[in-house]
Amino acid sequence: MSSGLVYMRPTPVFFVRCQEDEGVDGRLGCWHTLFQWLENQSANDENVLRLFGLHWPQGPKGSTKAIPAFDACAELATLPEPDSQMSVRKQTLPGGGFLRERFRSDAEDHAIDALAELACRGPQKHGVRQDRTRPLIELHLQWTNAPLNFSKTELLVPVSP
Image (tube, rainbow, N blue to C red; front, side, top):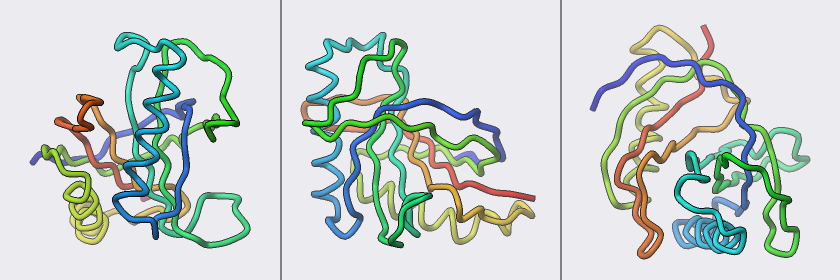
């Protein structure tokens, strides 16, 4: 795995949120809802630029409760309207500095374990601090929907000097 520090610009995305205590099944449910919405939007492969999995260990910024949450997100080339009936909303991913590590696995729970490990050991190794006001991010660069499989992923831990 290669790692290093990168900068990510703020990115508008569509997302579906679940509570982290729902585990892998809850996260997979978020992804399936998002993919169903994308299918309903007739979003083809060219329209879906990137997929992001956001892990909010302290709860999403601005929430009144510190309940860990997960967001399945899609960055799209064209911006349709969100769908409140399917719990699809818009948000902007926070930009800034991130510690990045490339990761290859087909299991969602393996990525989460690797992301947690990177958050623990990575910032100190690179002489930076983890920024706990921003989410831990799985950036999915290659995927299939049926069955759900993320074959090329980058793990991003938000950092500050």
